[in-house]
Image (cartoon, rainbow, N blue to C red; front, side, top):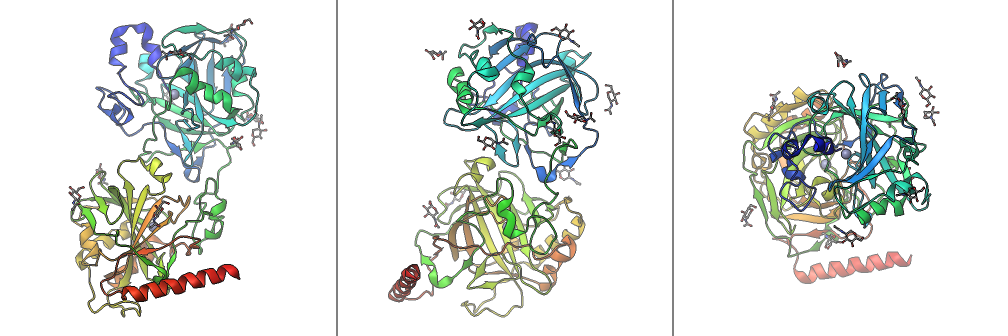
Length: 576
Ligand SMILES: *[C@@H]1O[C@H](CO)[C@@H](O)[C@H](O)[C@H]1NC(C)=O
Ligand SMILES: *[C@@H]1O[C@H](CO)[C@@H](O)[C@H](O)[C@H]1NC(C)=O
Ligand SMILES: *[C@@H]1O[C@H](CO)[C@@H](O)[C@H](O)[C@H]1NC(C)=O
Ligand SMILES: *[C@@H]1O[C@H](CO)[C@@H](O)[C@H](O)[C@H]1NC(C)=O
Ligand SMILES: *[C@@H]1O[C@H](CO)[C@@H](O)[C@H](O)[C@H]1NC(C)=O
Ligand SMILES: *[C@@H]1O[C@H](CO)[C@@H](O)[C@H](O)[C@H]1NC(C)=O
Ligand SMILES: *[C@@H]1O[C@H](CO)[C@@H](O)[C@H](O)[C@H]1NC(C)=O
Ligand SMILES: *[C@@H]1O[C@H](CO)[C@@H](O)[C@H](O)[C@H]1NC(C)=O
Ligand SMILES: *[C@@H]1O[C@H](CO)[C@@H](O)[C@H](O)[C@H]1NC(C)=O
Ligand SMILES: *[C@@H]1O[C@H](CO)[C@@H](O)[C@H](O)[C@H]1NC(C)=O
Ligand SMILES: [Zn+2]
Ligand SMILES: [Zn+2]
């Protein structure tokens, strides 16, 4: 949402202090640099927009109906202006108001404006719902009655913003209110054009059910990003013809005018009582009671879990294809003893979050530099194994996943890119375990016991789901991995193993397992409070699993023979 125009009348002085040299792309102060604008709040902890995860939203019974004044008036919309960042509709002063909806008092409505994507149907809403970005978003901006605009930007609830998602439909009215509004769009910056007084705000909102909305505390989404906004996002979108949506980027020459998603930093999102919410913790593993068990994850909203390159899988070692491009990894700062920031109980796993932009992985045939975000664990119970991947149908006691994101992409982009993420999977066995039948394990690599003891000692402090504690002990990832052979591994294209199961992961599963004490393993189910947290193996479909060339692998001729045999078996199956 924008306030910049409000300051226009206050003259050049304020306009300058407003950080008017910012942009969405193609200038010095793109969104990533907004935090550097002097006196701006853009780098603080209550920023907008956000991704609303409906599974984490709680109903607030105080969020009752709104009262809108003059939203239905055809005289309320005074003029339209392209200000170089957006298209803004300016309202008649002191005529339009909003109250109720859990707002503390009455707010005077000043303007509304839009955020959109680009002409090749790239969506451009600012907020997202469960990772879904709508084509556009409309913001209706109101200031607390009795406050000047300046004072409102300093009050933590000084501004009320009403956000409406705009959805693009294949058909739909080309004239009507949206046809009328878009006829005012222009690529001429700074000229205010008077409106014809033929449409009202209600005409634009159409039949969106105004009793269904989300609420959170945030900020302006443009510099100076003041943390003064009570946000309302209506759950139902406004549906308009996609040709009208296209008019915004086409006619204005402005594309992708939205700020990327900002971190929640512990904030909560609430919903009005009428808003339908999924059951909390709507997905779970096999043992827990919930609506969406693994077999039904594919039915979750925006789920990719029914795709054809899902993880985990059973790695049938006979069918792997040796690939010389799978060279050595380059691990950066895996030896840093202060890279782990905190450890958290997510309700599905125990996760260690790393400091940002510090630890990296490259090489290993990945082709890109990846930054390491976090690692977490999958486990079984005292009686059963709980690794996600199986090797030759054998499940291991536990599995550790080190999750890395391509450094050149945002997390959101990475989730939509086939190799946006790289996950390193380490199978875990008890220190004294018998060597398995498949291995060539004369030696038994052991990890630094001290590191695992230190790490697992934190788990008792995160009993409660959602709790997190800072890791203050010196523990590096290298300490945890010990001397496990990191040159020998399997490689395949797969997915995240939890909803929404994005098919964005280049998987590495190391051949040798990490080993630590059995008693430390039992800490995971005992303290986290849940067990058997692994997804069942998924069909390979037509994927291949590659393998580093094993030092003691069979001679080439035999490998070829095996490969032929396997190809024959494959074609034989096809003819059945
Ligand atoms: C809110 O509005 C809806 C319809 O717009 C109505 O059905 C409902 O009774 C209203 N609730 C309250 C508490 O006023
Ligand atoms: C609504 O708008 C009309 C003019 O169109 C104005 O006379 C009236 O005062 C406005 N109502 C309020 C409550 O401001
Ligand atoms: C509502 O606002 C008033 C003054 O602006 C303030 O004193 C009061 O604490 C606020 N109430 C709530 C529930 O935030
Ligand atoms: C958005 O539009 C698409 C295409 O017309 C439609 O399938 C979808 O149901 C709409 N979404 C919502 C939430 O209305
Ligand atoms: C505005 O659009 C017109 C026609 O669409 C084009 O000729 C003109 O160069 C554009 N002006 C700017 C400043 O982009
Ligand atoms: C405004 O209305 C007049 C008459 O109704 C019409 O001729 C004109 O095209 C309209 N202007 C716009 C920008 O819609
Ligand atoms: C809005 O949704 C609520 C809850 O589903 C429903 O009771 C109400 O009738 C709806 N209002 C309108 C105007 O459709
Ligand atoms: C390993 O990565 C670091 C940091 O990205 C880089 O400086 C170094 O040159 C890389 N080493 C090799 C052998 O690729
Ligand atoms: C955890 O560390 C962060 C900084 O990394 C600090 O702001 C926070 O206060 C710490 N929390 C606790 C409980 O020590
Ligand atoms: C993963 O998919 C990409 C693109 O489809 C392909 O080039 C690459 O060889 C695949 N890698 C593996 C390990 O299958
Ligand atoms: Zn906005
Ligand atoms: Zn995992």
